[in-house]
Image 1 (cartoon, rainbow, N blue to C red):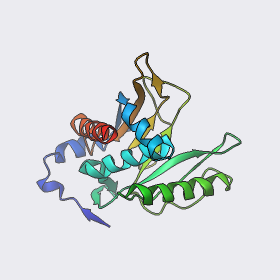
Image 2 (tube, helix red, strand yellow):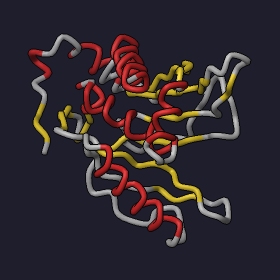
Image 3 (cartoon, rainbow, N blue to C red):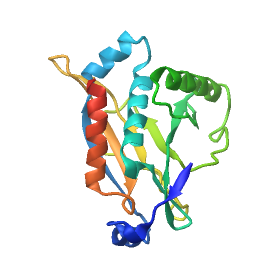
Image 4 (cartoon, rainbow, N blue to C red):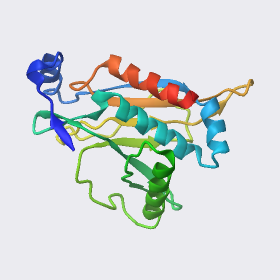
Length: 209
């Protein structure tokens, strides 16, 4: 479900009209996340760290309202919930785009995720299903590289307002602290650095619980 945002009463109306006309309206940041406690929690739950922080990511996305905004036919809609389209790697090193339904319940989300991972691994091609709605984030993990910046392939002629969130290689320092890089790219017509900061803070809090 989604509802139309009345931009006439929205403080960012001028920002939206300004940035949406740009050929590249997205901006991105890269930061570092402390995942020491989250990694331990994932092991205690006997689940993969990937599924654990994927769930924390999508919980944070659904918590911060601007990350649920999407531009459709030059209008802004607010979705009730946001799902995740993650890139899933196969044994032959190719990958496919998944569609994992959001649930605040970790066990339910885990079942949804493993079911979709199994489907992707046994289905060839890049697009293995239809994506009927725009209530998704584009998610990717790059666990081989401890990156400090990241760019994305994008077609400027293709209308897109979905946030793109990526994670890098987890590293461990001499004191046992685990960290990993997090990259966030968003449409500037829908939000600013303030809102990205809200997401990062929310995500870090969830990882620290």
